[in-house]
Length: 426
Image (cartoon, rainbow, N blue to C red; front, top):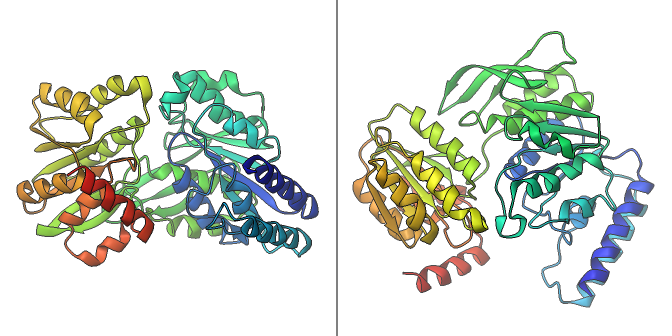
């Protein structure tokens, strides 16, 4: 039944674009940064266009067609009546006049072959590839397999925009589409950003550079760190490709802000600064977030690092590498949460001379942080969702409980799941 429903939904999408040929499709894929990039693109494009995007991770083979069509995923997926209602809504969507100009869709991949499958029924106008880095290595096993998977989207799209900072040039051999441009924070990228002023509170002031324009445009981007600029640069590049004016793009860029759990600055107790990067974790993202923590001029820095549970056979190497990036001169404490971080990251950080403490769950870690943090400290919380849930450690350190609404995974369903997890792992 699942296979039948998926095929039916894909057929509806094909018919939808056939009935509405003026609608543009922009897709986003990559190892990290997909959702931030998708939302940044939507934030810029809405300055001119009617835009549809699903802000969550509506990116599997069952949910992607529904997100494209703008139909809610049924709460009871085992109900035939629910799917009949979905099919009826899809037929109506095809027949009605279009209510959008552009659809921005995230494409996810947990294992080999999932991105190529999207190409069997989608033909995007623009594909954005955010990164090629270790992900779901229990299925991919090697980085070349990750690169082939993520870059395949460029080959079934009309145009591709590739993050030059986080995708090694050696993987260009997997591209068969010659219509490719690059974006990034370095000036070697065709689309890039020149940061001329930066604070942790207000983000970047500077200029966005596009090869189509003779002069850069002044634009502020309110995000923390260099790596979080890349989604904004991708958004600007997509805007240029779709014919937006410099003024429209600058206005859109100024409205980009961090999403919950993605390098979001929160106010902690004792006048501390919390870097909430709890949504998910990968080696590339941890390295970037540590780099930003080190740049903050504060009396004390603490890094709370959760296990990365999707690394498969590369887990030991990747966790040890991150432990070696922990600088005893820059960190008062390295605090780990989860088995993999305790086994591999913690010893590597300790060998470098760091003061290290390990915990089995996030609530315990948060209580420890609350006990050792000093006035005005900066605390990075970097974790994964699978059995780590560092957002619950953030709660212990927040200045105000009202800010709990700014954290990830706070729905009733998530809280039930986490309550059961912490009860079993106390």
